[in-house]
Amino acid sequence: MSRSPRRPAAARSSFWKRLFLWGVPACLVLGAIAFVVVKMAINAYLHSESFRLFIAKKAGATLHAECDLAPLQFNSSNVYTDRFKALGETSAPFSSLSLDQLRAEISLKRFFDHVWEIEQVETQRVEIHFDGPRATTLDADAFPQTASTEAPAKPGWLPNRVEIGSATVRDANLMWKGGSLQGAGLKLAPGDGGWNIAGQSGRVQQAGLPPLEVQSLRVRVRDRSVFVTEGVFRQGSDGIVKVTGEAVVGDHLDLKSTIENISVAPFLEGDWRVRLKGNLSGEVNVSTPLPVPAIGLPVSGTLRLVGGELTALPVLDQIATFTATQQFRRLVLKRAEGEFQQDGKRLQVSKFVLESEGLIRVEGGFTVENSLIDGTFQVGVTPASLQWMPGSREKVFMENHDGYVWAPMRLAGPVDKPKEDLTPRLIAAMQGAVIENTQSAVKEGIKTGRDAVKGALDLFFPTK
Image (tube, rainbow, N blue to C red):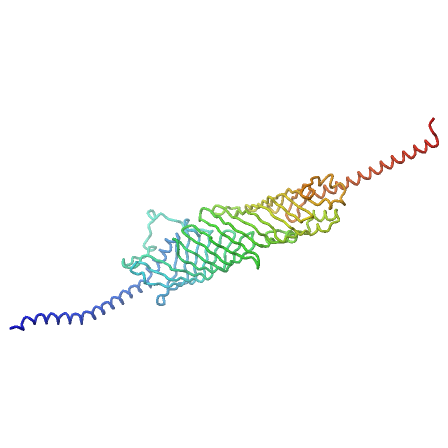
């Protein structure tokens, strides 16, 4: 009778043991089956048209563009597509964008945060145009999407966001009005609500400016704003340009740059490429509303010419002939600088100073428009150089200060063959001086002859 109460307890213990021994493996099997089923469902969705349309739709919302994504190809967690294209709306920072040979690695680490995490994106080539036709932005209420353009519905338990860890571009090409950046290598990483971009290699070209090679580039992009925190570009072995600034799409562009040892030749036209040599240094600024005005980019700054030489300038050749000083034919410039402002095809230079020490100094300003130059200058030369130019000090170079004697000069006409008014005035002054000296000599001779005749008459016919 004493053992009967223990049987139910033993039976219960045996039940829980059997439940544990069979239940845990069953749960593991069910869990494995569930995992396989879920993984298959995820893979099926990733390989589906729904996922492709979902990615295109999310990209379009982020980029403010109409996007098209070529079919996706999978290899484990890696995905590949031949092409991605986007046509920017009016609110987008670009008009068109295309990516070729796009590869990405999809991670499920944040699956339960409803995030498709793409750890790394690589694309072989990117081409972005900032000017050109754009997609029309439609009112969603007035023009609802049709079933054919909407991404098919997906299960609610699947992620509904896409986040990218980093991106690499092998060959980036950006085109804007009058210029481009081609062949750049870029690395992108998210940060501060936007993207941080680091670049190297490639070439920048802008109409009217020499091409520059990209040494390094640091850019931050957020919404419609692009901040250039550092841009270093090179021309040849010694020329360097450093740029900082910002651009806000549809609003303004403001860039500041310092340049060192940039060849002056690409900025010159016609014969001036032979007449003027040297390297430019100084500051150059671009400030303009966006879109860029039809006349082109307004550019201003202060420049100086380093290691400058000026040869074969007609007015200097004339001065060399008149003064018998051959140094005027080839001037080694100690100083050549000025402030400039260019709006489209009109270039205005002020506070211009050009000096070959101990020989000549030129001060003034000029404009160049439609290949025509018009300038007003003061030309100073040393007094000793005028010793063989009779009349030049009295009628042309009439001011004296800073170690030079000065004369005004107007320069105007075609840029490659301008005409100046200093030479004709010098010739007229010299001719006038010769005539005056001849007349003076004749008058003195007549007076001397008259005195001699009078003396002879007085000798032979003395007065009483």
